[in-house]
Length: 98
Image (cartoon, rainbow, N blue to C red; front, side, top):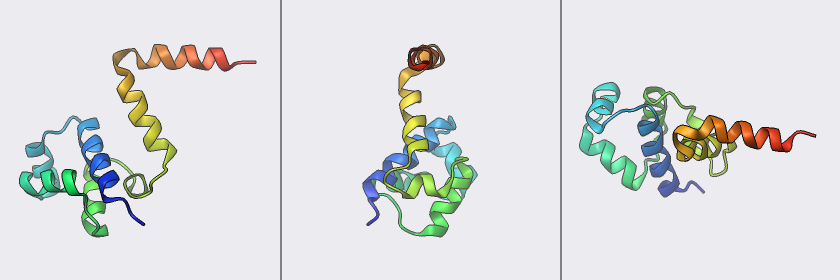
């Protein structure tokens, strides 16, 4: 089963990762800002629309669809670390070295 709420969250995160406002995304995708806002609050099931959004936001369609996609989850987590993300990740990697 596809989780539309999760797709909605991922669409917004993907747009924001590209530094796009709703107006910017509207120009890039051809969807109105109002439609994009609805997609980001309710999700979207139509594969052609999702593919258009994935292409515009430079993400794989699979990253938007599947509930457990470790690459997308990792990217979101890194983004939440903020500007110190690289330093934190390097520290974690060094701590895991044998």
